[in-house]
Image (tube, rainbow, N blue to C red; front, side):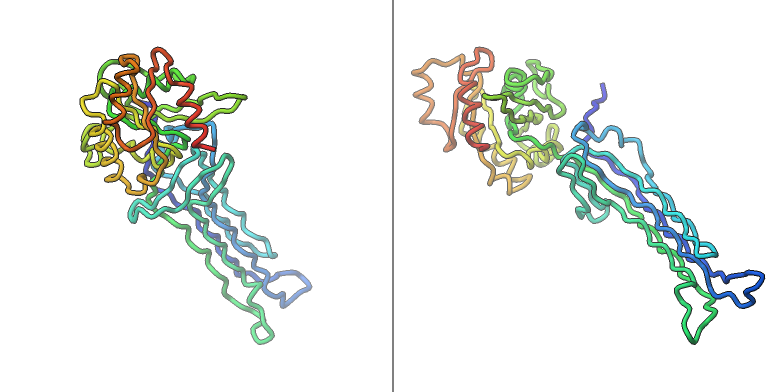
Length: 327
């Protein structure tokens, strides 16, 4: 089944051309030498991005391959202005970045609901000959042409905005944790790569507070080089305030797994090393207190909590810890 989660689209975009200014002279019965009265051309339509907090995917733009705004109308005699071309407004999820497909340069970024930013500006309308009359040139026979619109191939890329991103190998228990602490209903099964798209859940906290948690599809060693699902979803981690690493209690070497996960993130984007980190040892219902104490000596240098999504052990402590870090 094809997923509805689309976080990358590419299309050809063109803003409208400005209308041409008019060359026209006043023609009236009793005015033998009416002066210039050519009006200005209208502005070309722009292409605008608008943030919409109800959207979480770029699916609605997936099949739009050409997006072209309307041209401005030409100016006319009697100082009549040309009509402005209509803008095209594209609604996008919060966290969308627009890039020039050839240079990969960022054009705009949408971070708030209702925020509008111009992706491509429409061309200005040309000035009519009414503007060019001078004492020495009473009959200017020229006007400005309109300025052309801008055309380019554009990439829209979505990076999910979540407070906490779950990082771990497949089967670390990320989806199970998300389903326990939030209303999210991710698909859960006992084989790797059950999660093929990021899942978002709102985690309720004390006194009607809440935070957003994202279950990013599992990383494997070599993800940054494109193995497994590759780094396609690593970009979503870039926006998270806290990275919650999850490693199951029955892992062969917890410290080594943590180092591999850190290594993949660093290869993808070294700035991820500056993010706040927590480690949760999942499936801790397999352990007793004595075993947990023994394991603590072999854990990596990062604040660690033992949790079990199945029994609820350590879940409230984890939520408290996340809330402290976020605030």
